[in-house]
Length: 220
Image (cartoon, rainbow, N blue to C red; front, side, top):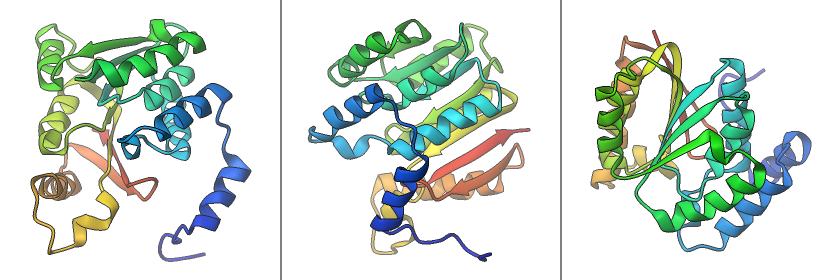
């Protein structure tokens, strides 16, 4: 037993992956291609993708929301976990990055599950609300520009049903959230949302130290 999370060293991380990771070949190939890119650190780790897929299965999700898709690894992991007829509404601003994901989604046979919107996410989310899709989503993943995190969280709360799950990535921000010498917009936005969700009575919450930190917020 332990009264705190065990620090994950490189060796322990390798052990975790070697014993329980069930990453498919197509997910690994997408991850490897992304790793060669300049912005590769924007991609989630394979253990987080597997964890999110498990969450989707646990809550029986059929309709999910992704805010920030990058090269499509998280969308692919979640789409493979969704049942037949399940759908992801994916929001991103880059055709260059998402075109990489499209190739793998098509190869995996899940392209029909992913409805990709290339536009500022706030516009897409506002359109969904205006279209009457309030409280129709089961699951949401937020991993886009940090200065708009609060806006994305509020829109997700509107769109996700009671009992649904909102997940927020990068909440530990490589430890920068506790560094008093760091005072940029992105870090401050993450700090503010972390504090807000921790006190938000609209949700039940847990911050999980997986990847760069993932907050789970279940809408009450």
